[in-house]
Structures are given as C-alpha cells and as structure tokens.
Length: 133
Image 1 (spheres, rainbow, N blue to C red):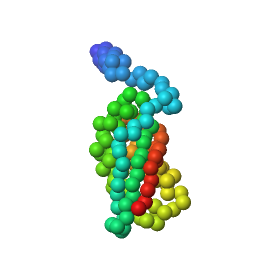
Image 2: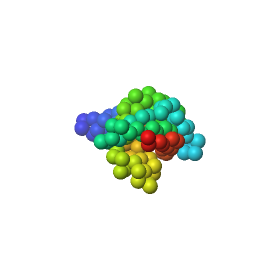
Image 3: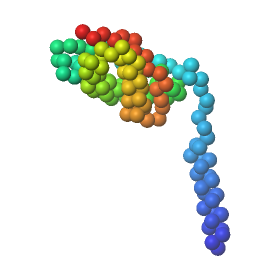
C-alpha cells in the first residue's frame, strides 16, 4: 500500500514539473536586446549642494527582448524614483571625479537589477547626457 502511494506521489510530482513549465526559456542574443530610452531627462540636486543641478539622461539594454522591455516600461516610475534617490545622494566630490560616469553607470546597473528588475535583466546602462550645473 505504501509503495503505491509513493508511486502516485512521484507521478503527480513529475506531472507538476512538466506542466508548470520547467523548460528553459528560448535563447536570445544579447546583441539583439532592445534599449529602453523613454525615461527622459533626470534632474537632481547633489547632496549638500542645493544651488547645483545634475542633469542626466540614461538608457538601458534589457533582456530578454520582449519581457525585459515590458518589465522596465511597467516599472518606469519606480525606476525614476530610485535613480533620483541615487543621484541626489551623490556629493560634488563624487560627481567631479574623473571616473564619475563609469562609477555612476556601474551603480545604476547594480541598483536596477537588484531593486527594479525581478524577472528580467538590464545588461547595459548607457549614460547619454551628463551635465553638472
């Protein structure tokens, strides 16, 4: 009797695995992933410098192509909020560093993948405008 229950349990588990979609997602070429550019210009005051402004434009290469783009579009408000929080925490010293663009690009990439993207991934961050006034 116990053996038949084990067999039934195993068959049910195997059926669940097949039906629930444990198959891998279709492969995609990262070179063909779309770039999300609709965030617009961001403006933030650096930390401790209310008389200065940082203007930034940023784009994101998101993968997989369809679902990644859909997720970042759906979460654009959260993305903008988190980016403004990140930018307004930057000091003038950090924003005047010679490696400021690369440092900021890496921080944005990490932040977006940890806090915004849950099912998909940002593969690249492109800073297309950076102006400290």
